[in-house]
Length: 430
Image 1: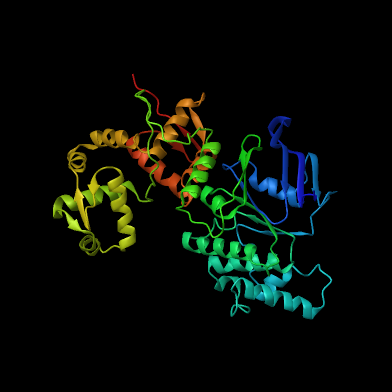
Image 2: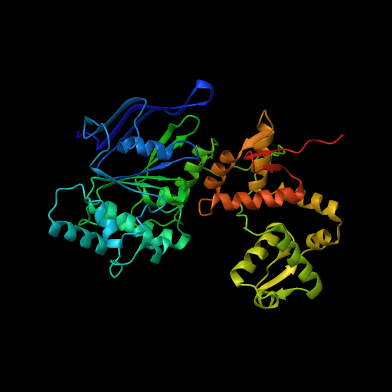
C-alpha cells in the first residue's frame, strides 16, 4: 500500500492563555490525505479547521505529534502544496499576470517557462483578457480566480483552500465551485488532490470525496465520512440530502434516524429551519401599515407604490410571512388576522405578540435553548455564529445574527452585549 500524500499523527497544538494557562486548540489529530481525492474539513466556528490546515502545510508548527509528507517528517513550509486564501491576498500594485507570477519567483525557471506556466493557468481559470488589469478593477469572483491561478501555477501536488468561496456572492461561489471540480476531474489538469476548509455542509457534500467532521474546544476529529456520489453532483438528489442530514446530525451532536419517526406527544417541539430575511423590524411594521391603509395589493403594484427594488421588497414580504402576519397567494400580498391583531395592539402588547412568535422560529429558539442550558446565563457570540453558519450554509452568519439581535431586542426575548460579544437572558421580574 502506498504511503499517504499527507499524514498527521497525534498532532496537538497549544497557545499561551490567560494567567499562564495553555489553551489547547487541536487535540491528538490523526488524519491522512491520499492522492486523487478531495478532502473537506467541516465543523463549527472556532473548532480549529483553518489551524489544522496551516499545521498540515507547515505554516504553523504543532506543539506535539508529527506531520509527514510522502512518508517523511515535514519541517517548515511544504513546497509541494499551494494555498488559496479566503480574502484573495492579492498585491494591489501588481497586475493579474504579475500577481500570478509571484508564486513562481522561488522556483528555478527560465523566463520563457515561467511565462508559459502563467499563460496556461490564466487560460485554465478563465482570466484571458484580464492579464494587465489590477485587483481594484476586478470583481470578487475574478480576484479569487487570480488566487486559484497563482496556486495552480506552481503545479502543486496538493491544492489547499481555506474557505475560498465564503467572501463571494452565492452565484459566483457556485460557479467557482463547479470550475474547481472540473479542474480536479480533468485528466489534463495538474490538480491531483485537494484539501479544503469549509463551514458549509452542502459545499462539503458537493465537492469532497471524504468529509472530516471536527468538534470544538479543543479541536478534535469527530468522524470521517466517505462520499462516493458521482460528479457532477445534484444538490437535490436524495443521496446528497441524506449525507447532508447525516453531517448536520454529527455536527450538532443530535441523532437523525434513517427512517422518519412520528414523535411522541411529549411536549417537545421540533421547529422547522427557516431562513431569516435580513430586514429591520420597523420595515415589517411599515408594510403592515401600508396594507392596512391601501388594502391587499399585487407585489408589482406594491413595489411601485413604495418605489422599492423588487428584490429588497420581497425580503420584507417574506419576513412578514415568516412571522405569520402576511400571506402571498399568487402574486398578491394579503395581511392576515394575526397581522391586523398585532397592528391594533399597543407597544407592550406588540412586544408580547412578537416574542411568542419568535419562540416558534428555529433560529431564535436556538439562542433561547443555549441560554437556558448555560450555567452562567450567557452565551458567547462565536458559539451562536458557529451554529448559524451550520444551520444556514448559504447565508452570511454575521448578517443573520444582526437580524436576530434586532428582532429579539424589540420583543425583549433576550439581550446582546456588543461590547462583551455575548448573549444573555432577561432578568425575571417579581
